Image 1 (cartoon, rainbow, N blue to C red):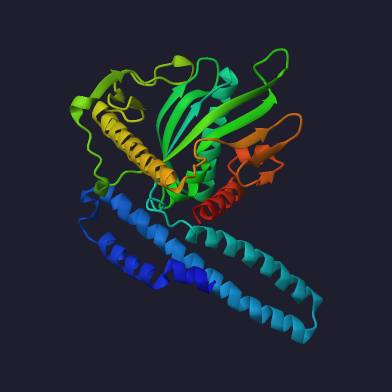
Image 2 (image 1 turned 90 degrees about the vertical axis):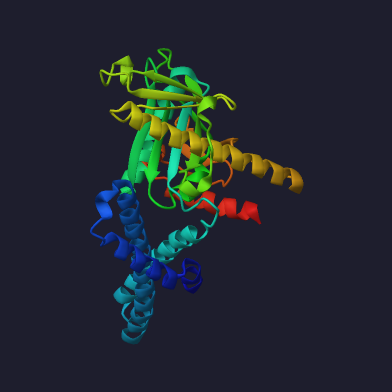
Amino acid sequence: MESIEAVLDLDKLRADIAVLEEQAAAPSLWDNPDEAQKITSKLSHLQAEVRKADTLRGRIDDLAVLFEMAQEEDDPDTLAEAESELISVKKALDEMEVRTLLSGEYDAREALVNIRAEAGGVDAADFAEKLQRMYLRWAEQKGYKTEVYETSYAEEAGIKSTTFAVQVPYAYGTLSVEQGTHRLVRISPFDNQGRRQTSFAGVEILPVVEQTDHIEIDESELRVDVYRSSGPGGQGVNTTDSAVRLTHLPTGIVVSCQNERSQIQNKATAMNVLQAKLLERQRQEERARMDALKDGGSSWGNQMRSYVLHPYQMVKDLRTEFEVGNPEAVFNGEIDGFLEAGIRWRKQQEK
C-alpha cells in the first residue's frame, strides 16, 4: 500500500483536486461546455482515485485490529471475518496496483476504440458487434461515459466496423492491451448445416488527441465525402446528407462519423479520429525504429485472444495465458481479469 501511495503521489493528487475545484467553481465555467466537461470529469476521476486510496488504507488499518480482536477473544467467527476481509483487501490492492502500472506517455488519455470485421463473412460481422457490445457494457458497468461516432452495419447481421470513444482518464492505458486480432470459434448460427466456423475481428485502440499533440493535416490532402447516415439493414437514420467520410490521401486512412445531426459537427469529430489515427501511426513508426535498434520485434496487431464456444467453452488470452470458462460473462463486459493480466504482461515486456 505504501508503494502504491508513493506512485500515485496522493499529495500531488490533492493539490490538483484543489486547483480543479477552484476552476469548477468559476461562474464562467459553462461558457465553454467542452472545457467544463473536461474539468468536471477530471475532478471527479481524481476525487475517486484519492477516495479509493484512503478507503483502502482505512481497511488495512482496520484489518490489523480485527485480527487482534479475534486472537484476544479466541473467536472463530471474528477470525473467519478477518480472513475473508484479508482476501478482499488483497484483491483491491492488486486492482489498484495495476493502475500504478499505467505510466506510458499517453496512458492517462481517453480512448478511441475501432473494431472491424475481418475474415469469416457474416460470422465475423456478428462477432465484431459482440465485441462492440462487450466494451460498451464494460464501460457502462464502470459508469464511464461513451460516445459512438460511427457504425457501418453489415447487410445480413452484425457490423462491418465501428468507432466509439470511452471518455474517462486512463481509458487508453487500460484498454490499449486489447489491441490486436480477436478470434471466435463456434457453431455458426448463420450456417443451416450447423458447421463450426472460425471468424476474426480486429480491435484498434487509440489515445484521444489533445491540443499539445501537433498533428498537422493539410486540407489539400483530404477528400471529404458527404452521405446519408444509415442504420441496421440499410435504413436511413436521418433525412439529410450529414454523415461525413474523410480520406487522408497520403496514407489512405479513411474515417467516418454519423452520430451528430450536423455535417459540420460530424466533420470536426471525424477530424479528431483521423488525428488520433495519424498520431498512432507516428507512434508505431517510432516503436518500429526502436524495435529495430533493439533487434527485437513487437507482437502488437497479432492474434491475441480466442473465444471458443464449441466444442468447449473458454476465452483465453494468447499472450498472458489468462483464461476463463464463461464466454457469456466476458461478452457481457466482464473483462477486468484480461485487462489486468494484459497490463502486467506489457510491463514485463518493457523490462
